[in-house]
Amino acid sequence: MKSTLKQTIKRILKNVWLFLFLLCFSYSCDNEHFQFLSKEVPIVYIQDPYRTLPGYKFTASTQTLKDIYKKNGVQYPDSFIKYTVSYHRLVYTTTYKGKQINASGAIIIPINPANPPAIVSFQHGTMFADRDAPSKASSIESFPLFNEYIVFLPDYIGYDESAILHPYYIFEPSVMPVIDMLKAGKKYLNDNHIPYDQNKLFLSGHSEGGYVTVAVQKELETHPVAGLKITASAPSAGPYDVGATGKLIFQNNTYPSPAYLILILSAYNDFYWQRPITDFFQQPYANNIPNLLNGSYNENEINQRLTTSFSVLITPGFLNDYRAAGETGFKEMLKLNSVNNWAPKTPTRLYHGTVDDIVPYEISQKTYESFISNGSDPSIVKLVPLTGIGHEYLTAYLLIREWFKTFK
Image 1 (cartoon, rainbow, N blue to C red):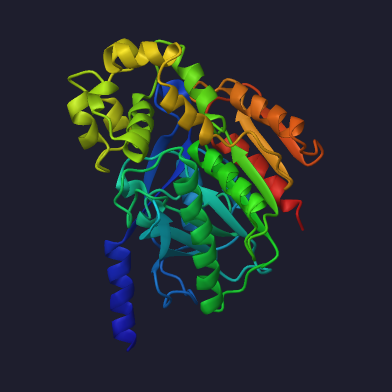
Image 2 (image 1 turned 90 degrees about the vertical axis):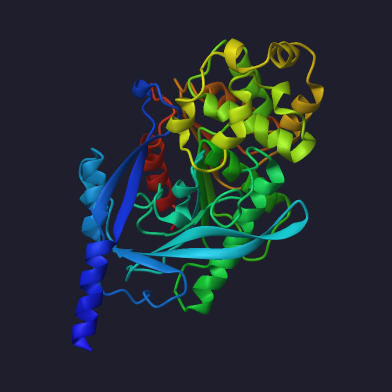
């Protein structure tokens, strides 16, 4: 028995490696909003009461988590990391275009916390490669940052279990897999007798994850679901007004990450119209775009195969019509899927870098003004400008972490 256990431990230590990264959105690299800094850190075997549960993938020690921080240049990781964590893959059902489909995500559970932890649902930013989905255990953006919480990380539709073109910035298919994962995840915790604070639920996410966070908040405040009352919501750098974001982007002649442009145009076209791809994109790029979005390539790999110039990538007809009075159907759908025109009642803080060149700071500023004019209490809903910060992740989340702690 002991020999078998030792062999198992050796096999785990030899063969299993954890690819984790902290998302640093520095734009000195002229990348899109996320610069992924992946590190190989060996998983440390440790006694974990959740190892036998369905979906168990690995256990990561506090030292492993601290090493992730250190290798990504973060000082004083001891102040962030308290608990060893258990990592699990969850498969559940959601709906897409009225049909039931499988979706997936990850759950991270702290081991032996001092008190039953609250849940943070963390919505990840834009991704392209299926290998980066949270359930693949290779893109765990909030792994170290929310160490004192049980973290739910939905993959979204379009990744891992749901091999569909990701419905990028489309309200309903963005919202439903998150809400359904919250339901399925809480059932997973209850069924396996995992203690947690059932009275607290936090939402957070950056960039696309910021948009999805506000979309989920809007849906749950508008159509409450038993057991899913939000304690606080902290989105960061999201394009909440999708139409205004598009207008600001297309008033320029270039964009640093064309991967985003091909994804949103392709996603809206696939979801609503099925127009020829050549309505939007010029050759030689047009014919290769479906291949670029098949889940095999990450953002950098896609950008290397495109151009940042609108005049070369986008068809003149679409570009001119969009900038003028044309493409009304597309503009109407962008407006329909925007999440800025309502009045949040839950404690909410919008974090945004003032020099963000991917999602302009103006979007959060105008969204905040819209929330207040629609009736939100300015003592409850706040805008937090991050002076001199671009489309970056860490600055906001250190503040979010401290804010969440105030909800005792």
